[in-house]
Image 1 (tube, helix red, strand yellow):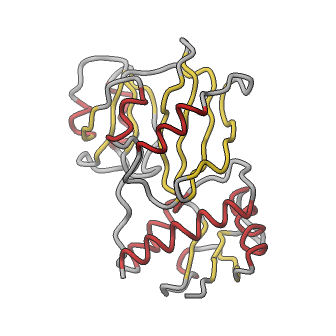
Image 2 (image 1 turned 180 degrees about the horizontal axis):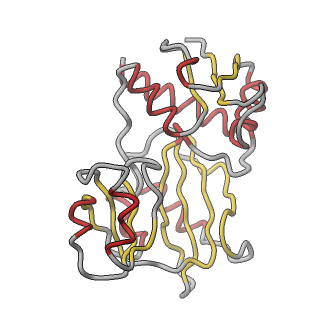
Length: 239
């Protein structure tokens, strides 16, 4: 099926850097692109691919009756690489947790901002905006001195980009590639973030699905290829 890519824009220009990279990459691939400013301007048709904020993509998939992909934030297959215990919980359960501090993040992509919780009041702005039943992951806080994002397409590491901390402190590619091999339930395209902790250990930070992923400076054509592969996989699974 021939796809048309709708890129979120303002005044006929992509609204952010990932949009610019997507535009460049899809043009290199010969894929048609159009701009949209509000998600209701995007046609509800299976030939469409949406590049925009996560909420826009979620809205479009729901309007199409396409189930949201399952979370791959911290896959059970990769818990070993996190170097810390990971608990699956809900916001309601987190509110009654008594051991502080702890780190919390949503299982659903970008539903709320991940953070360290030092007291119950740190959760108030979250519970005021999302249901208490929302699933989340908690763990003890880890201090990362450097963080890198790996981009994986069809099981291969195609890019590794620094995004936080000391760029001169580099994680072990051997460990990263081992984790990629161990993640046997991986989608066709996703990212895997690794960092160095204060002890110099290479630890998993998180994974992210490619359906709504920041480019972080990845080669535009590779970025577009990852988006196209993952969207084809999601829409094929929903057919």
